[in-house]
Length: 375
Image (cartoon, rainbow, N blue to C red):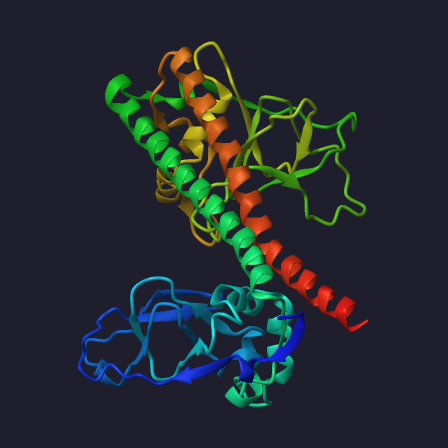
């Protein structure tokens, strides 16, 4: 079969199999990111005998919110048979020797297809896409061997991304569990015994790298409008020093605290508190940052924040934080594991981005081949 551009109506058809005998209890929904998810609806009083069955290798989709959301909720079922709401459409490929279901799913996942569906939706409040109009969408259809090649490339990337994501989660779990054990093994100490406040101001205007601090515990480029603002009163955060935002209300229940790991000083708002570790032979700044990144620390800081309209976790409360201080050799090992974890996370994120971007590239390749054949 040569490359061609064919309407979906020639390649797919609806299925309307109902769960009348209640043989299937696995109830799913379809998310906007093109995957099946466990239904979150309360089904305790719902008769699911009228629910539609979606078999392995079939698609489920809902087209009533395309205009509102700018995309359709469509997914291909690879797991065991399930049931979905009667509001969904269920369809399947007519002949998998002509069109591979996984290739079709790739096509339905790209932003170009979502934009086409949005354009074809009606003018109602939800912006529904009529099934018959959905069937008018054209798909670039290469030979089955080429489809399989595209699917293999995409599937291999998905598996690699999933594998790295799982290994990252496992390593994260191990790191968190080990950190918890430190309290049992070494007890806790007052953080105030190991840190001291700093108050170096930028009076000489020697530092111009203005930073804010995010709830992800990182220094970020300041978003403040600095037109006409003097940096003279801003606090300087030297390499190896910390800064944190004392206000915790309206901050996602997190404390914005960060360590300057660069080799240049930053300047931060004078409303921020800055501090440093007094003796790095006893407490590594990077180890302390790891402690600050724990969800337990955020909960502790929010619980110990005081005020009315603006609740703050002030310096006196920061000094009262309790944490284990293991030998520096142990701290170094934990920090090394964390760096490995961060590297794995960057790789995982890169693979996710690559997986997301590869689909449009492959479909574009199929479309370009059609144009070349036509020429």
